[in-house]
Amino acid sequence: MEASKEFVFRKFSEYYKDPSTAVPAPPVPEQREFGYFMFKERFMVRHRRFNAIGTLRAVLADTVPSDVYHSCAYYENPDFDMDKKGWIGSDLVFDIDADHIPTSCDKIHDEFRCVKCGFTGRGITPEGCPACESTKFETKTWPCDLCIQSSRDETAKLLDILENDFGFSEKEFRVFFSGHRGYHVHVESEVIRSLDAMARKEIVDYVTGLGLAILDRDTKEEGRRGKKGTSKKFGLHNFGWNKRLKVGMQKFLENATREDLKAVGLKNKALIDNKESVIKRAINDGRWESINGVSDQTWLKFAEYVRQNQSSKIDTVVTTDIHRLIRMNGTLHGKTGLKKVEFPARELQDFDPFTAAVAFKKGNVKVLVSDAPEFRLGGETLGPYKKQTIELPVAAAVMLICKQRAEVPP
Ligand SMILES: [Zn+2]
Ligand SMILES: [Zn+2]
Image (spheres, rainbow, N blue to C red):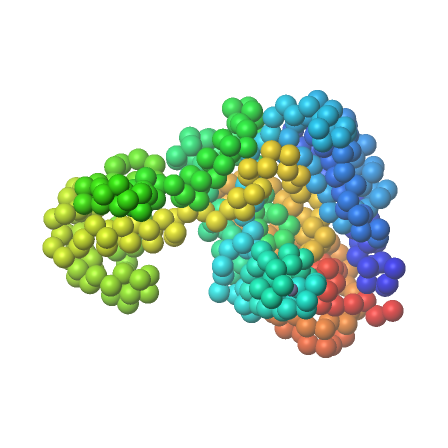
């Protein structure tokens, strides 16, 4: 193994051997499937069962995987083949990752390359290659402060929905930094364990604001039946998403200028010029028809904008998959060397992953950096670097190597 990989492997090994950073056990570990990705051999070991966390810790120290996962599901026989495991239930898990959120920085630091035809692009990796439709890509990403802030905003919206619309108490969900550039939210409450994939899809639809009666009614269908003229008037009631739309509309108007209105595709100046009446008569009193020159179409467009804005951009596949493996708390992320860390939900805005998730706190090492933007890690601001040999804190060196932006000189 080349010197760089050997160096990261050694650091991961020290981490998993250190009793002061022993990984915490998930609830009911004996009913979970564990899996891990082998550093050197590059394959996934799955269907492992650990009745005691101590055994798992020993395996981690011994094998030193690059990434460690456990099932969100509880099984009678977690180490059996998939169809013989005996599914008992599953935590409700949400994954929010800058990989899936359009950010202003993704075109700057994210690149993808189609493995099959070599097509390259910047920004979010598409599902299929635009040139050959292949779905295999090599990606180059970077976790920056803007990415983290985008993920944080989406997580805040999710937590608000879980708490205020679903009625979960803060004790029922756990919030984690993922180790890369996103957050995980686990709901481990008994009441959700038995939900099937369909029920979870309903939850996903709610969180992402899909299927709202007021916005998603089938106007084509109504048109076919010749009912177009009789379609219901715009109106919002006072709970759930309807309330979110109203609050969002009001907040937007309170701070918006004509330019802001234009920027979100709303051309009707009456919304801004009469903003006081709009807020009072339409949004607060529900007299939507009372604002001169504002049609139902405009209200729908405005509400649609607010829906886009207020929905939480979760990775929907993760939440609906009742057999999903999720990164284990306290373990290292193979793309960064940062660890997955839990923190109190109310500290979401103040929790700094680039300090709290740093696993390697000691020492410096000399590396040859090919290309790195300016970044923050462990309380220091580093870079930008371009084709230079430099001595860096171990955590920064590990991150750059994991991101294929640096090498340990042989
Ligand atoms: Zn291609
Ligand atoms: Zn970014």
